[in-house]
Length: 208
Image (tube, rainbow, N blue to C red; front, side, top):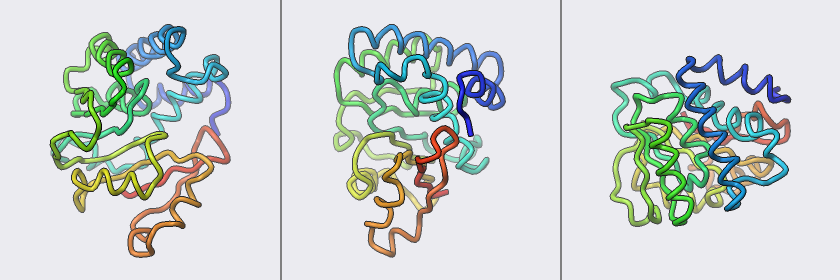
């Protein structure tokens, strides 16, 4: 379990190189600065940004296969309701050669994401500043979402981007098992819940 900021930094450092850590340092600084102007993250979590937000996002990579992250995996990683960039910008920072698409409809957050992508020098990361329903569908290699929508609605909205090979990694907090249980059995059987490394009570809904 990742409990402290030092543990969170050490965990993330084990997933990337010095350039990746520098990109994430840039993101953390930008989020904390912008949080003084708009509510990107809860103020109480600011001192724990690496544990509560960055490591919490980074752990999603360990719930997908190497093939999903590989050069031949096909389409982009799709992050829904990216907000301040968690988890999508963290994924992009850790995998800068993988195409990542961030979908966010709130104008001020779109502007922040665009600035962060530029500051972190992520040319393969694209921001779609509109509702998901208006984004031209493409085959996604993986789909992530944090606090985007209830699971059943999320799956319906993301269906145009999903193929048999698409992985899902959906941090759902304490509601993970309950939301999964509410799905039709045929759909529920495709997913399982993994325990979060950053919160003993939280779950990640996974389809790998």
